[in-house]
Image (cartoon, rainbow, N blue to C red; front, side, top):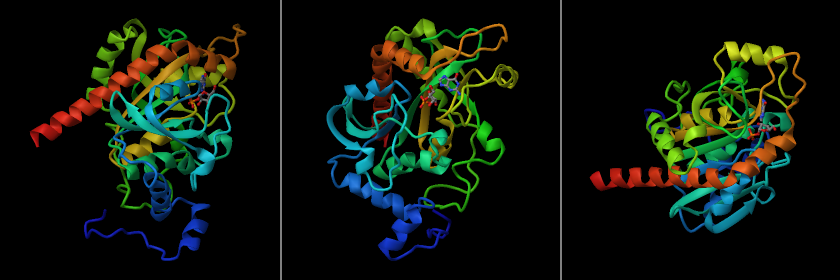
Length: 314
Ligand SMILES: O=P(O)(O)O[C@H]1O[C@H](CO)[C@@H](O)[C@H]1O
Ligand SMILES: Nc1nc2[nH]cnc2c(=O)[nH]1
């Protein structure tokens, strides 16, 4: 909200015009419509938002007292077109915490602009979340990483943003956040440290790392030269998602935790003939689903306890 408490954005009175506008850009009013469609059918406010990456949809299976909305039923929602992405929004309780989970996400390579890929984050904000847990499947570029490892994201390189391809491009709506949001504290340090402890508790301690993630547009996997360049830039894991969702979340002051499941090792040698493929990405997700579900449950519980602690002090 701008200083005078009024949005700097013009508001449009009639609904058909708002819906028409939604095709070109999600206005605040358009996303309020989407959030209201959902909140009218869900008897609680979610505290934590979760985004399931490729092959990680099973994270949502542990949600209890579920209310499911296939994306095609949700006004203004895009459709998930990628194998390994169920394509529904799941409300319910995880570790007794009210959550909303994207079982399947949207990617730039599906043909959606980044603001459309990230729109569910704004809808979740309007629904009441204060924290976002984003997961993804990524290629391991750091030489210490093995397939099946977990990389807790400590920072990202917004490679697509270097050319100005950014979910916040275009007119800013102060009701979501400021025109120029800072990103130097995008990933919550306290949650990162706590997540490392939780990882150990659920048996992931030996295979958990902390590193830098970058998002390329895809859908192709990278060349040797591209991966060598990214390695020189300090990238530890390479994906095709998450960064624009995190930027959108931070713009709206949502606390963010993100992790990558390393599903393949990036090929950085010309003599190696391995080739990344989506099937193996999904298989690795299935292999890790039990531990990762416990891991996410632990992080969600911590977030809720932490918040309760704060509310007790207030
Ligand atoms: O980032 P998530 O959605 O986990 O999926 C990753 O895995 C897919 C490639 O196999 C790409 O979509 C990439 O982004
Ligand atoms: N860009 C990219 N995304 C991935 N998702 C899973 N593996 C990879 C990879 O090697 N590169």
